[in-house]
Image (cartoon, rainbow, N blue to C red; front, side):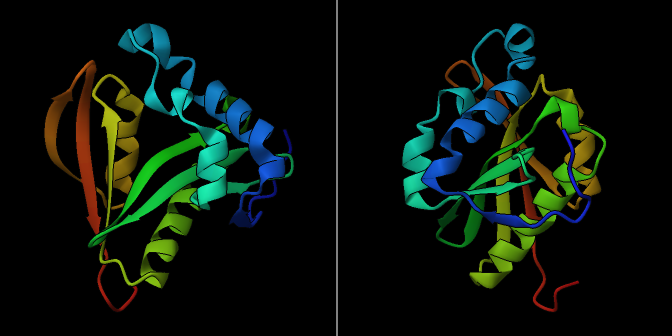
Length: 156
């Protein structure tokens, strides 16, 4: 996979459907055995998300994506996925910076997300990008860590 470090993040289209599914599956499949359940993003209705306009991708071919949803008072980062072949190339950071810009452009003062407690890699990544752990909560079969990031108004 070749990915330019400054490849733009763009709104996904229906033509990206297969790539969105492939990258999501590749990114989340390694966690199935560890957490004992299929991660929710693998079971998402990708075409419905694409039609809703909440999927954004980067890379050509697609190496990473985010699914975001505007909610009252915050932007919910539903999923972030980077293809394992593109790890270590700044794709995740580029996507997280895009999510911030997307929230600011919509006047939303906060980003929220959750991750499975057993996806411990994420517990090192999100704080580096300014996310704070809010709570740990069990939702059905999922043991989740909930994070938030407040966005100040001056863009810092």
